[in-house]
Image 1 (cartoon, rainbow, N blue to C red):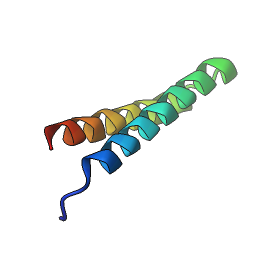
Image 2 (cartoon, rainbow, N blue to C red):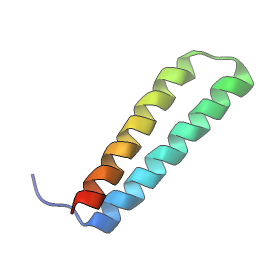
Image 3 (cartoon, helix red, strand yellow):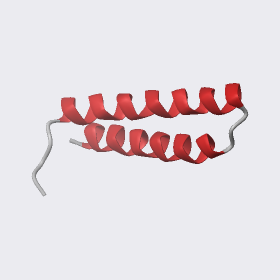
Length: 56
């Protein structure tokens, strides 16, 4: 695995968090519970990327 630039990791983390929030809003607006699982996964990925960017 090659080391990533912290700026790229931070950008990806923010993008994943944004997507997670969007899926959460879609779940609430549409009443679809399937989006909750997707939102949780995207938020977890976002937090992971932000943590890796901060560590470098």
